[in-house]
Amino acid sequence: MDKLPQTPETYDRMFANGGYGGAFQLPYRHSWYYPMYKGVYKAVKAAGARHVLEVGCGTGGFAHLLFEQGDIDYCGFDFSPEAVSQARARTSREDSFFVGDATVAGSYARDYDTIVCTEVLEHIEADRTAISLWKAGTTCVCSVPNFDSTVHVRFFRHEDEVRERYGDLIDITGIARIRKPWLPDISLRNRLRHLVWNRYQPRRLLYLLGMTSFDKGGWFVFTGTRR
Ligand SMILES: C[S@@+](CC[C@H](N)C(=O)[O-])C[C@H]1O[C@@H](n2cnc3c(N)ncnc32)[C@H](O)[C@@H]1O
Image 1 (cartoon, rainbow, N blue to C red):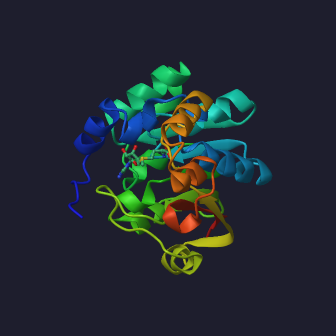
Image 2 (tube, rainbow, N blue to C red; image 1 turned 45 degrees about the horizontal axis):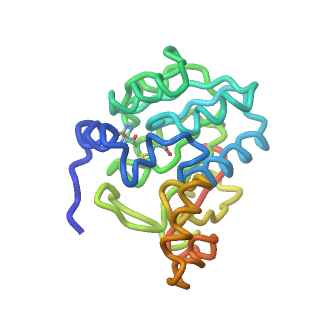
């Protein structure tokens, strides 16, 4: 698979177009990332997080969910200025986002007890350097995919591979599997439209009803404490 360069410009262009199927510009509840965001939020709540720092916040989908749920302090950064600008516009929270690089120590110079990092580590060649900059004792809630893409430098086939790559940096206490929906836009309207279009395609109908297997696309959401 041809790969794109891991530069802010690559992501600026991707976010200006909304990403695959426009998923990054959809209301977070309509995006195929929603099941993953919900899993991450559940883990963040269970850990008793009070101050979240999100690494690679993208266009602010998870941040929006967190703000709507209530009482956890949040700040997020991304090295794509376009992502940060869209995150600010989505949430109307100018001060909650900044442009920063995950592999630079200065990006972490603030108070936080929890790091959220979803669908980012697989985009960074020096992912382990980034994690090494996270404060010891911090709760970490991260996700990585089990599928390849033009912007992935790696992906993971099994929980063991996640533990192997990150287990010495993060004391991983749990890994959940979350299936990726078949459509980038999971709004009811879009699902109904696809059900009609695919009414003579039994396999597609099963996918639309959520009967896909994890192996066809999914995320490992892992939780732990930075060693
Ligand atoms: C697939 S998107 C995920 C966005 C968001 N975390 C989410 O789950 O919706 C990957 C993100 O990682 C960001 N990213 C990649 N390398 C980065 C780096 N070195 N520092 C900060 N952000 C980075 C990209 O700009 C992009 O927003």
